[in-house]
Image (spheres, rainbow, N blue to C red):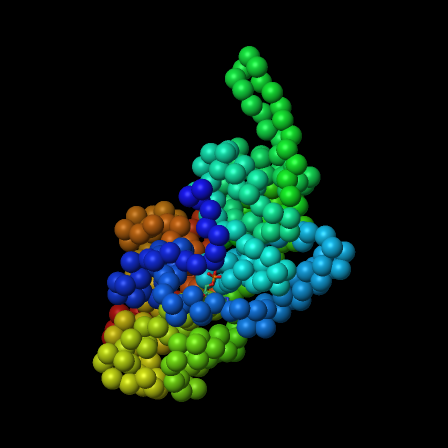
Amino acid sequence: MAIISSSLDESNNPRSRKELRIVDSSTIAEENTNKNLNSARPKSFKEFIGQEQIKSSLRIAIEASTLRNEVLDHILLYGHPGLGKTTLASLIAYEMETKCRVVSAPSIERPRDIVGLLLGLKEGEILFIDEIHRLNKLTEEILYSAMEDFRLDLTMGSNKGTRCRSINLSKFTLIGATTKLASISAPLRDRFGMCHKIEYYSNDELHQIILNFSKLLNICLENQACLTMAKISRGTPRLALRLLKRVRDYAQVIKKTDKVSLDIVQNALKSQKIDNKGLDHLDRKFLSYLNQNCHIPVGLDSIAAGLGEDSSMLEFLVEPYLIQIGFITRTTRGRLLTTLGQTYINSQNEK
Ligand SMILES: Nc1ncnc2c1ncn2[C@@H]1O[C@H](COP(=O)(O)OP(=O)(O)O)[C@@H](O)[C@H]1O
Ligand SMILES: [Mg+2]
């Protein structure tokens, strides 16, 4: 069936060949792939840097279920894009020595899509549903009994001759991933035995992640260059990897070298109009827009309309970092520039 992808390979994404913005809407989807990038995914919990508490609780759950010879409880992973939800799902499958079937919720359109998926699972296998908050109601209802009792409760036929049929399923583990926990209905959320929030990474963790990526990509990276990239990766491994690849392009094409020094990183970032805080032109446009309306909270939809951008992209990819570094605040009435943000954007305008 078309909606099933039996491996964690990502599809080619031509958008990524365009000029880099540190974040853009393609970041919501999986990063593009090539041989190098596929091999850049951690292969074990040990290679998966950070998130120690989540790894430790997953290790215990995996060991306990193996000891009892039971299927692993359903797991819900939530957090911003690029923090490692899909990677963690693949690692859980790896640790459980089982297969992981990957599907994105919007592609499960009809009841028969989810029924086919569930019937295709063998004992102990994992079904990974990405963007699980986007499941439609019918699919969600089919999942309730499948998750709780490993049973499909189906209603068949027309009004006159409606029949109910139950089909037993092989015991499986559902891993759901979402960027919007609040959009998941309570009945679905309650059926997950574990729920983990993937947090942003510290600079030290990103430093380690970039170092590991650079080894996999055969890049000779100076320590200061690595530290600088870690600082501007917005706490997000996917962005760190993306930056590293663009810096490598710059080093190879413009400087004709495979050695990446601090100087090369700084020049590469300048050529992409990314500043030393990791902010790109969209961040600056966002801040400038708020600056023009300073002292008044501005709704996200107005900002999106003013900038000609998609509001959910701004909400997930631009705002979180600006909030994290204290440049904007989110109030019930809208977004507000802080004094820190104002000082920054005024200094940029003076340049
Ligand atoms: N903790 C981590 N350690 C090393 N690499 C990571 C980690 N988390 C994510 N990555 C890398 O970052 C990229 C994005 O991760 P992914 O799992 O696709 O994020 P998400 O599914 O949350 O959007 C992948 O290339 C992955 O290998
Ligand atoms: Mg993902």
